[in-house]
Length: 202
Length: 123
Image (tube, rainbow over all chains, first blue to last red; front, side, top):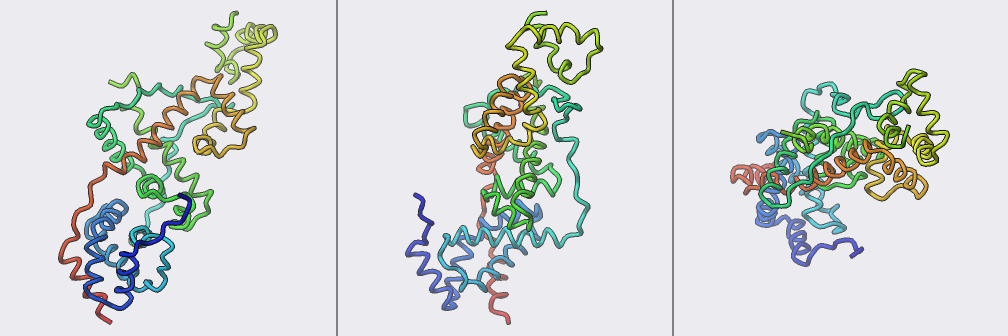
């Protein structure tokens, strides 16, 4: 614990073969990681064709920067970051829509700062696996209902597991701005989940 | 007025939504009851709106000791913030947990593998 993850001997050998231009090694890398990267790109872009393009961009970009892979992180982690970056580039290339606001989904306060509407008591989430999985799928669907400028930071933080600093780096914002985006997105998600999880929910 | 009655109207009292006549028994109760006076004082140190901004830092254990104490103090006297904190914490954990329930990765389509290898070899 506490030590930075170092690539395994197997990974180091694979990187050597990639640097040497071994075609079979490239193919092996795509087969090993392509599925995961495709899933990442689909989560971000929600479009299969664009996701495939992003994965292609990601691998080509990774092949070009193999010399820059210092083994500071695991190969999978390194590729994951590159795929996120490639998918975000595609997302930015789309026709930019004005950023949506989510004020309606944020908690409302009165003049002196008290909650305007008392938050409902939430039931304990179910312990059994099936019911829990069903709630998680519903949560996942609600995340996708958020406007893009809140959905993406939340996906990066909670689904892709990036740190706030990494989210900021991917989005080109300050750490504080990324932190606020994620916080607002979670508040909005809470509002979207409220009808389902409030104790008096039908 | 007793403490239970005070607490029932406490939010409206602190938001100053009452008429002067309605306020009078609250003022009188606060003047004579140290417990309810402490509620008024604690709520003045951090509002619900301010508290909502600190939720992630609180849950991450990133608040300094003074701010954390003020936060805890507020949650202790405010049922609204107690519920909001709980539901926000659940939202956070369900959001992270939902990652495991995403569509599992599939194999890369063969044509995509071919396209990537070809693009790599083309100048």
